[in-house]
Length: 143
Length: 405
Figure 1 (cartoon, rainbow over the protein chains, first blue to last red):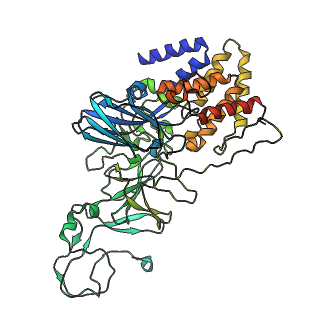
Figure 2 (figure 1 turned 60 degrees about the vertical axis):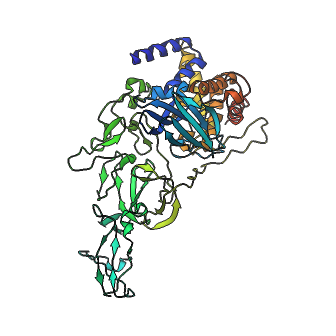
Figure 3 (figure 1 turned 135 degrees about the horizontal axis):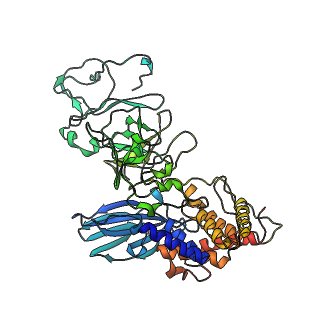
């Protein structure tokens, strides 16, 4: 079914011949989303997942945090959905060194079953920063 | 200790005796790991404490006997359970495979090598089970010998095959890359460069840090499979000799650009400088390729736009030929943007469309900063940092002003 949708969607876009639509669809399908690390809450109910997103040649890497119920199977499709992300940052055009896997150095620490502390470089460019997600409170510490 | 004078001999026995300066009385000798380091850098472990508590010791000896070398002594009983003395680290290569175990005192206790798909070469004894690509291998007697890649198991003995298909199914396949169609395949048959940390997605390894002098810089030290940023270990040269002692927390050096910016032609006003680029990357050649694609597809005007769209977006997609930052690091990000503008112009796309696509993608993926830089469809920044949108514009001007060869 997914394969069928993929080709139908692609065929419709191809027929339109629009560079903008075709490009967005193509890059979205091919965008590289890579899981860097996962840290489960003490009660194993939640999973904090750190991702690296490569949008392609015209942009740099971004690092993102998702919080998912632990029983959710993580797939690239879920990881692509920007609405699931609670924290997005990047290297601020070289102001912050990137580490293994092209990720900004972010530390994740569960302080309770529903409280997560996120430490990140103060000079990073923060795109999105939510304080709560799915019953989990997130504390941010710029270091 | 230096065993050079014993070259050619076979070691059949080893003993530890007290130093001549040791006073008579009760004494202990404790030792944890004993290894021989060959001149070619290989490490053979002679003794591993294994199931012993820290060290093995000869209790309650007495007297002064023959002269010997200092090994490791302690009369403190708590050393047996001291974590700092029982911790070992392993040093990884460019894809995260463990290549050397380091004892708490920074001496090597194990050396390993793997073929490109992870089969271990010249297996040496080590209690470390985190091996190929840093993944845990079932190595106990009667176990599978498979590597745990989280979502799937991997067999290094089957030349790079997962034991289960990709859970994402055909959605994960790239229609233009046949290697991705095979659902059991490992890292698109590029195991020396790519890794698959979760069994779901291949990507660049932790680092490609070969320094050109036959040495590999440390990318991470691990304890029980978890990166330890506070570890201090020795970097070994290809001859096995330690060359530097470093803390893992030190930021890894970026690869130096392999070229310098092309000087702006003084006799051609309006020609922006080409940013530093990887060796072999040539914006002029890419412009030529884009012009050819644009021209050849006019042979069939009905499909021209679609064909050029697909061709261009495929080359610019993550990890593809014109995604230069994925080939050498973020220092080539500017060149990627510049080339995108230049080749896009050569392919016939207006600047506003190129900028909108770049900004729109970041908006779709949630990585664009529309709050600071404005909506993705709006000049001058298109949700991008000014340096990124300006490099796209510079590349566009480079083509339009005829700056290419």
